[in-house]
Image (cartoon, rainbow, N blue to C red; front, side, top):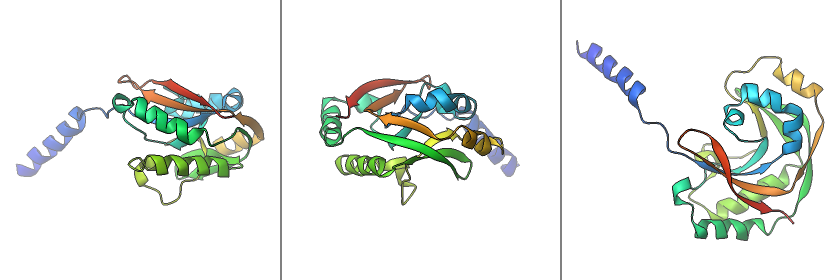
Length: 186
């Protein structure tokens, strides 16, 4: 009887657990890439369906949308103004477990921006600190993806893109994401 009640409580908890709180992210949008591989992202990356463009993440999760104030925005401005625009190419498909991604070349500018943002916002380590090393990447598919997706992507490469802006995107209670702030890389 006790195991039945315990099992029932676990199932009930899983059904009624509250949705996660809205999040935010700092990223570099890459519309040129969306124009070429966006159809794959729409099919295999839930963030694409929720309004997030093709991008390389700089810092996620970031400050809760409700806590973003002028002080946070000023601090991001102070970090971003030290970086210049640059061009990037995607020539290689990679995998992190079930995640299929495109590898940017060069990757160092993304890693340098992430490191500078983490220094400015040490309470927000990339990906909640789950990884000892953050590898810059553009996610195309999460969770399960067709085994031939890597080949399909490779056939559409290389893709060149311009890194011209940093965006602060925030998630609404509905799960949809929107751009809250933009910083131009000079």
